[in-house]
Length: 141
Length: 329
Image (cartoon, rainbow over all chains, first blue to last red; front, side):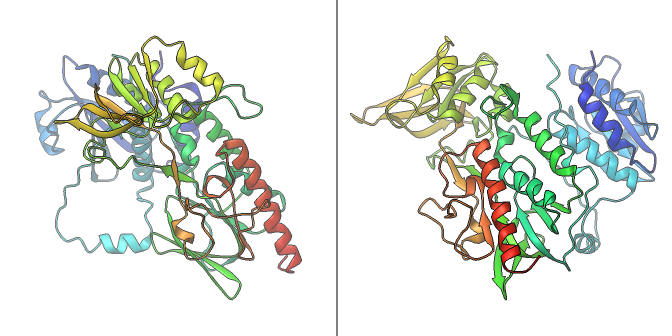
């Protein structure tokens, strides 16, 4: 049974029509998939099937150690969204609930190569002159 | 384990026609709930130049699960009703500023200025202020400490985390009973605790909850503190009549004890009542010419979606009359 309801698939198909550039979705799992890995892979497969601009690549956390290291993946299930370059966006765990919207927003932004932020904020961000590691931990409330 | 489900909120993804900061709009509608969206539909049909400024769509309706008292829908998921509202609004090509909160509204030379958190600002000859409400806290020890660690304000969001667990629901109105229903669906044991004697919820929903075996009704008791170590482990309640205290072992506490109007951005502009609600007359006027309010943020009693939708329409029509009478249109 499909994870994404038919109504949302239609919406996503419409939204994805606006995708202007390719987006690679790198998914890191393992040979014997944990339950959440399996769920995430299923969800990403359905998302990728809705647009010719979204390319899902599935990797093994252990066997593909080089890639795992390259993308700084330290736990699974992990999803990395890549555009013309690696913007550093990672989702750990199942991007379900409200995080599904975040996942889709990120795919759209990466495809447009535009974070959709006001100029004023972009100007402020351009002043950041050293690497920043931002982690958003999602809690129930 | 079942897939936890997905929530697709397209309002922040779909390309929007953005309002222009250099334009003086005939009308600015502030808010994204039933009142604001209804006002937007009426304004759009009058073909006036207006913009909608909202931090989200749906407002507090998003935090409920099902609705069975909105005319035309015997039973509808809140999310589906919001989608229908949103689709209706977006069927008109309305400029919408989405995702940023309004922090202040001022008036100068008969023009209203709406200032947003990101310092952007929009101008209008009239304003319909419909920013709704947010949850009222209990303000008791443990409430802030255990927020997200058992304390929750949104059953739609969080009830699934309490499957087979013991949960206290604070409140006695419809919201508390809807929360109980959401918890019943995940087989939680529910303790409804109401500070007053009896229950204020509609009889129909009370009957549905009463059919559930694992629900306990405790009225005339006040929750005085929430206790635990890393997460909620119990709440202490106090009998309002004899002062005796009792402890309920539980893993969750849902707080549904009312709402606080989001009237802060107009605190210095219009009259607020003792509850912080914007005082309006029967057609949404606030006392400041050209400034109207509608929905849950106002002094209109009975916070219901259908009432908000009606009042939003009334406010839009009143503001339209104002524009005509003052030769702005």
